Length: 256
Image (cartoon, rainbow, N blue to C red; front, side, top):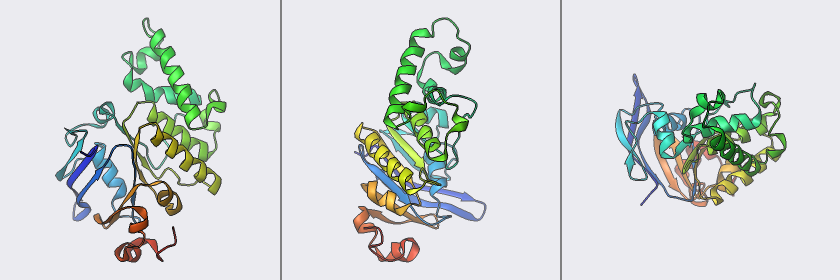
């Protein structure tokens, strides 16, 4: 049984069909890549999966539970969380505090009570801080835990957003172009980090334009073009598919 099951997902904006009858499965413990040219429907698909948009037709089922009618915060509580193309960080907070914000969806105290230091939140806050430190270690940011987030370079901001997603204790994390704007060294670090995260038991779906990255880390790929799925399978098979080559990748073997 798949962890995430998507069936017949369709979304129209006026006369434009952004996602057209999309179906796929994601299995636990894997990294699943979603690729395609600009305007292929990838970000809209992520919005549909995570409740930021409602589909016209189709269904999203996560660990046996339907999500189609759920709001984003309800989906996060069920164990599926996402990042965005543009980092959504609080620059006037420390790196550690940004991770703590992501974890408050899982605390009984809530962010407001913790921020106001109301009675009864101390022990839970201590546990949350320890967990945040652990997550910063996973993404390689423990050395800047108490630095201002606004002072971080772009590559480390990307890693921080991933750590903040992890703070909500997801079973599945969806990453929208995490390598955007990264140099080759930062991209290599990101790849190692994603493999490490998957090794802890968290399943990953990643939308990405960096073909070297997505081909190197993915167990399976979905290829979209004009809102429709045109190919699906292991990277070494997908990159040789003539339909994919024509739509997106260029010469076969470029990303072997």
